[in-house]
Length: 109
Image: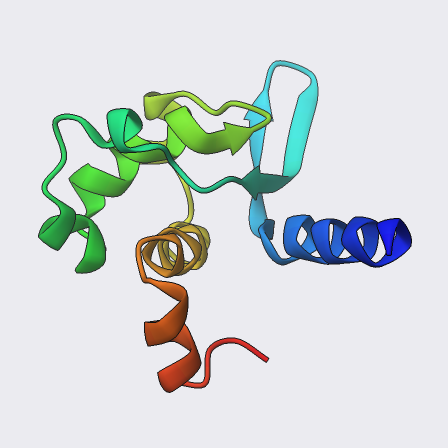
């Protein structure tokens, strides 16, 4: 049973990885993928949930640094390729939906 829980946790983390089409350059380092985690309510302060669900660019730029690993800055988020920002936004909006809504929309296996 412990093995099943580990596999479930591992696949959930894998589902939260966004591979960037245009890596973020930080000095000599390139960030090619970002892992996003579900935000806690306090990490959503200063952001209207409706705007986040609508993938408002300013809202995404505000939330991404709070939930990304490696942690990206707001300036880096603002400089992201639009396709990468959209991919991150899709993950974030998924975090805001209840499991029952995801199941009804066939978003969960």
